[in-house]
Length: 375
Image 1 (spheres, rainbow, N blue to C red):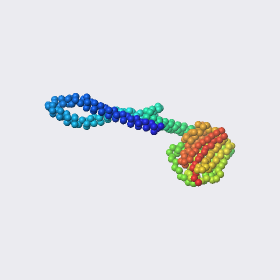
Image 2: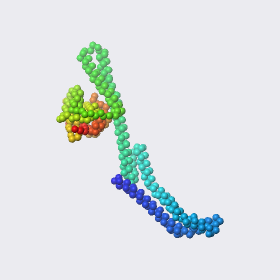
Image 3: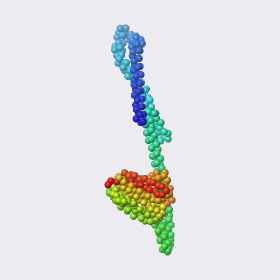
Image 4: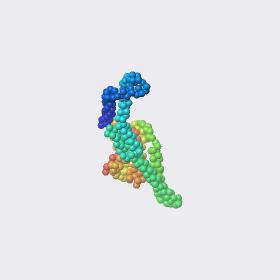
């Protein structure tokens, strides 16, 4: 379709050029044979001879000058006249194609000015019209996504600033009680100290969220790949999360038939599964297992992190990997992060030429990481 339209444009230009040439040739033929060598030949000669006679020439001299200037140079004079006529006609005929340039200029102006109207070009320029409208829509979509992302980021900073007050207020309150009552019973003192410690840790987590936002915006991820044991990586992460599993009353099961060596950035890949584990813990029902399933395919390895929890709506699944996006439930829990974990995980996985996606149903939610594997 695209080539057909451009062929049509080229054909139109060619036909118009041929048409102009034919018209000029016909006019030249008529002027030369009908007018100059026919109807106007004798009157024109008489007029020129008469003019020369008025310049004090006799009739014979006037005829000689006429023949010298006009008759002998008739072909050259007519050729120059035809060339001028042809160029002038071609200039007029090409005005339609300069209109095409004006249409394109108007279309570009509409893109620059972010006009809401669709760009409408002539039929011959339809492929260009499609591309310009596509560029226009892509720029508008990118701007919209950027504004959304910026708004989510701003909202998140407000949320985190507000959330900082809660644990800080509790820490000050409980420490004040401990300071004002030095003879407080040991059991009560231990309780207040434990609460203060828990709130202090939560405060530290929130502060780390602010650093995470800054790092995500300013840091370009550079991979330092090496061969690692996937089984060892997952087992080590599972051990590190053991206290968190215990607190949430969930268990973690790694289902892996054979150990697999992967050529990846160990630190970055650990961060990917760290984020997936945290996400699984945050949205798991208490007393349910978190399953990590590793499958070796032909040239890829698929790692699935599955937890049993509330189903995530399909339209929300599509936004999980956007930066600063958090599910609504995260705002009401102490586990809701900055909404960067999954976005960073996606970036790291894609830097390893892999993919990551999410699935959710009434029984479980799972994140599936697929990485290239070379035996």
